[in-house]
Image (cartoon, rainbow, N blue to C red; front, side, top):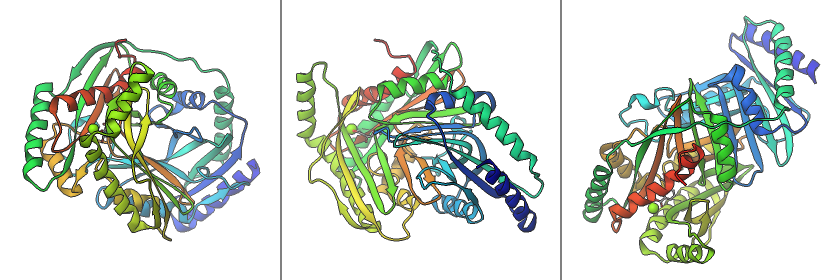
Length: 463
Ligand SMILES: C=C(O[C@H]1C=CC=C(C(=O)O)[C@@H]1O)C(=O)O
Ligand SMILES: [Mg+2]
C-alpha cells in the first residue's frame, strides 16, 4: 500500500508539472480501531485549529479530520461555487484504495453561514460564509470498520520527500492515538446574556404583532449567551461531554484559525446515500419531565398543542415541497411523533425520498436552507425579517454543517445547540419558532432549555 502511495505521489507531481495545477492524492488504509476522541486529541500538537469531529445520532459514522490539505471558500452563489471547486479538485485526483467504503478517500467537511447578507460583526471573523476543509488525515469509522485516509495535494514544486515525511508523521499519530485519552475541565466564571432578556422578549412581541397582520407566518428568532472561563476551554473535554450527554444528536466540532464551532444538533438537514435522500422536520418543543409520568404528560401535551403543531406543520410543508422537486418519490408519516433528548423533546417527522439523477447533496442543501425550523415561512421574507430585527450575528449557527465524499454521499445537520469557542470565552446560541400565537415569556424559557446541552457540556450548568 505504501509503495502505491509513493507511486501516486510521483504521478501527481508529474501531472502537476505538466498541468501547473495542484493534484490531490488520496490513499485509504483499513486500520485497527482507534478511539475517535484520542485521534482528535493527538492532532492538537501539530494541527490545533485545523481539526474537525463528526458523529451521527446512530453512531454508524465517526469522522475525524486533522490538518487542512485543501480549503474551499466562496462568496457568491456559494452552494454552486463550492460544488464546482470540489469537482475541479476531484477531476484530476489520484485515488489509492482497495475497498469501496463511503466517507473515505477524497472527502471534505465544512459548512455555510446562516445568512451571507447579514451585517457581519467580529464574532465570526474566522469563518468564511462557505468554508470546507479537505483534511490531511481522516479517520473514518463506518459501521464499526476503521479507515485512515491520507490526503496530499502535490504541486509542481514538490518532490517525493513528502512521501517519507507523511509516512513518519502518520505512524506517530496512529501510535499516539492508540494510547489512552484523559479529559479536562475548565471553570465557568461569568455568564452574560448578550441581548437583554426584556429587549429580546419585546422583539418577540413586536414580531407576533407583525405575524398577525402580514403575510409572514413564522420567523425563528435566536439569542446569544456569552460565557467567560478561567482558562482556555478544552475542546476535547467539551466533545467528550457532548458524546456522553447527547447521544441522540449529531456531535460536531469545526476548528478554523484558532476558534472552534461545536455542538450537538438533533436535526438532520439532509443525508444522501446513493440515490436515497433523508431529511428531518424538527420543530415544536417542550421540556423533559422529572418523572416518567410527567415526561409522558409533557410529550402528550406537545403532540396536541395547536401552536407547536402549527410551528411543525410549516416545516413539513416546506421540506416536502422542496424534496418533491429533487425526488421521484417522497414518503413521510401523516402525523409527527416525539424525539426526546436529555434536555428537551420535539415534534419530529422524518422524510425519505429517492433522488432524481444528477442531484447532488449540495443542491439539496441549497434548496432546503433555511427550512422554517431555522428561518421561517415564507422563506425569503422570513430571512429578511431576521436580518432586520435579530440582534445577533448567527454565523454558522442554524446553518448546514457536514461532509461530502467523492462519490456524492454526504450528510448535513443544521448547526443548532451549538457554541463558538474562542480561547477562554464562548458564545452559545438558541432560537425558537415564533408564530401568531407565540408567547414571549414561553419562547424565552424555550431558548433557556435549548442552551442547556452546550451549557452542561461546558461545565457551566448549575445542578
Ligand atoms: C432554532 C432552534 O431549534 C429549532 C429546532 C427544533 C425546535 C425548534 C422550536 O421548537 O422552536 C426550533 O425550530 C435552536 O435550538 O436554536
Ligand atoms: Mg418552538
